[in-house]
Image 1 (cartoon, rainbow, N blue to C red):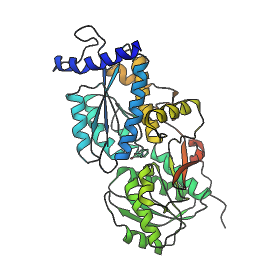
Image 2 (cartoon, rainbow, N blue to C red; image 1 turned 45 degrees about the horizontal axis):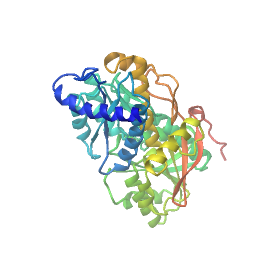
Image 3 (cartoon, protein in one colour; image 1 turned 135 degrees about the vertical axis):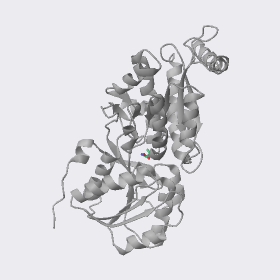
Length: 398
Ligand code: PHE
């Protein structure tokens, strides 16, 4: 009880002292000697086309921040999360992240889910040397933006390999068509990595078609794909377009499986696609069925707070905030080079999505899980480890 009262007081005073200290970096202790909150920025698609991503990531992040504060904060100071909405719009991430750094004076930035938006914000964080931790952007280029940019999820080079192997071994497909989003770096990258690994495994890409984020009619591309008679169609896109693509594919009489990557992950996928994706598959980072103790603990707390089980995006949002807090603790400082270096030297950090080790390229190496859609629900099928995905085993020829 006492602890909770204190946190409320800290957080309340945080806002006040930020105003009083206008123009200066907040000092560790406020005007009356109370511990000054550590200001953590978050940018997310809270509204707009990919609102499901931002909402879910934010829920996980917020849960972590609340848990840390309930346990007394970090270095004796509470974390104060400042969330900015980029409305899923191009250009907005740069604007809100600039604001988080220059006006809100955050010590680190958490975000984003979509690689395109992380790519927009990364140069700004890098230039100010404010560490940015992307929870779930999988395009390799994100962390290549500089030594202050990190992620806690796997890369699309791995995800593409895992999906290529899945297509050959589980779907038993050798002839695949690809329908990707030319306007999303995530989709372009994942399509390329998949293609490379699928061809290396003696698969054939029989058709390649493209669309642009926001498109609503995919009939021309799907008609061309149908003519090539693929055994399965790879759709590495985000849920809004994927839902419509699935619907229209079935309307055109295409009955072969569709499969995709983590971009499918949102309840809206099923709301849009109806039954069009029953029995189909996608890969992602985490499933509530995963049995580790940390994962189950997270699922329980998340479900108690929000009334629904978490998805992978929530798990990674949660882990990004916990990992930052752990680094602040190890750095013994809530900013600057010591904080950057502490994040960079993270080893075997245990979170909801498994163990995270930040490698020299500031990436993490994790397993993927395959999900199938059954009775309109997402169901866990199997885990694919990095070793399994990269094992190149063309299946025996005819
Ligand atoms: N990996 C996707 C990207 O980089 C974002 C994403 C992560 C979407 C997890 C859903 C689940 O753009």
